[in-house]
Length: 431
Image (cartoon, rainbow, N blue to C red; front, side, top):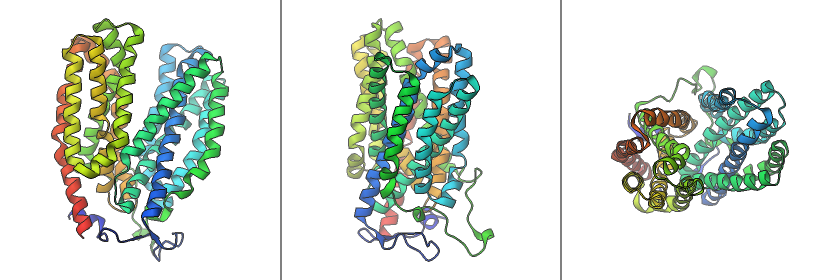
C-alpha cells in the first residue's frame, strides 16, 4: 500500500478541507480554510511557547531546589530522572488519547494541568512530595509535547504550508526568556516556590484564550463507528513502522549531538581550550541563539527549497561547525563553531517531526507516529550526556566531539528520507 493510499486522497491546492463529517457531530460547521489554519498556526505556536516557558522555568530553578532540600548528588539525580522517565512512558499512550478526544482537547487539558504541577514542584516540602510533583510534571509535559507536535502536523496539512520550524523557534525563545527571568529572580533572592507559583498563575490564565483557535478535535480523532469493534485503535503497540524507526533513529542521533553541546561544550572550552568560565559559557549561548535564529526562517526555507535539500545542506553546515570546534585551538573560534553547529541543527528536528507526522496520515495516526519518534528523541536527550561522559573518560573530550562528525554525516546522508516525504506531499497535492 502506498503512502497516498494510506492517507487517502486530498483535495487540490486551494480547495477547502472539510472538518465536519456525519460521524463527527462536534466538528465545526464549514471548511477549514486558510484563515482558520492561520489562526490555528499562531495558537499552536503559542502552545509551544507556553510549554517551553513552563519547563524551562523548572530547569532554571533546579539548583535552587536542590539547595533548598539539601539533597546529595545521587539522590537528586534520581529525582531529576523521574521527569524524563515519566514523560517517555506517557508518550506511548498519547496516540490513543488523541484518537478518543482529539489533539486540541488533550492540549487544553494538559495546559491547565502543567502550571499546577509546576507550582506543586515549588511548593513541595518533603522528598516524597517533590518526587510525586516531578513525576506529574513529566507526565503532563510528555503528553503536551506529543499532542502539540501532532496538532502542528494537522495545521500544516490543512493550511498546506510548513509551520514546524516556527513552533520550535517559539519553544527556544521561551527557554531563553525563562532563563533570563530566572537569573534575575535568583539574584533578587526570590524563593523557588514563589517563582514557580507566579509563573504558573500567569500561564494558567493565558492557557484557555491561547488555545481557543486551535483546530477542532474532529480533525485528528478517530471517527465514531457503528460498532465499537470496528473503531480504529491507537495503542502503545501501534505506529512502530520501519519508517518511524528510521525517523526515530535520526532524531535520537541528533539529540545525542545536541546533548553533547548543552552538557559538555562549556567544559570542553574551559578544560581543553583554556577559556575562562565566563567565556566558556558562551558556547551554549551561541549555539542556542543561532539555532533559534535559523528556526525563525526555517519554514520559508522549507517552502522554497524543499525538506530534502534543506535537510542535507543543514547537515553539512552542522558538520562544518563540529570541524571548526575540533580543529581550531582558539576558544573564540570554537564558540563560532558551536554557533555554526546550532545553525546547522536548527531545522533538522522540526523537519523530522513534520515528516514523521505526515507519514502517519490523517486522524490520530499523525500523533501516534510523532509519539514514537519523540520517544527516540527523548532517549537521546536522556542518554546523550552520559554517553559523552563515558567516551570522554576513555578517549578525551576532543576525540569525543570529533566522534560527532560521523553521526552528523549519517544524518545528512539520510536526507533521502526527507525526499520521500516531499514526494508523498506532491502526490497528495496532485490527488
